[in-house]
Length: 85
Image (tube, rainbow, N blue to C red; front, top):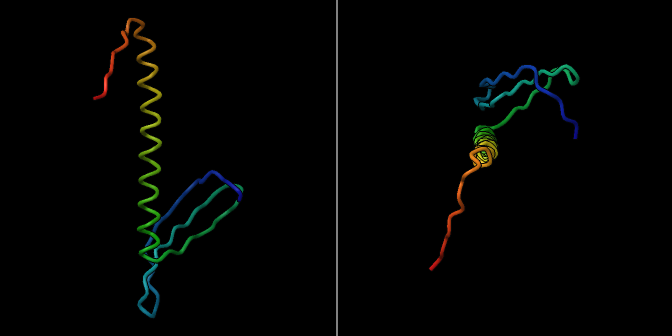
């Protein structure tokens, strides 16, 4: 699998003569040129759900890195005792 930075991305709805709709995602990169994905509405919905979940994980990970650095910078943070019943 090859990976390329995407320079430009365009998402559009494509309707064919037989009435079937597809979602077209056109990608433009310096190395790979132009490529496109044609997805059914169901496939596009699944992709969108997976993208949102991945973005949420990345944001949480980034947030945890920031908050742990803030704890280290405070210096006088005392440890808390935790008990479970």
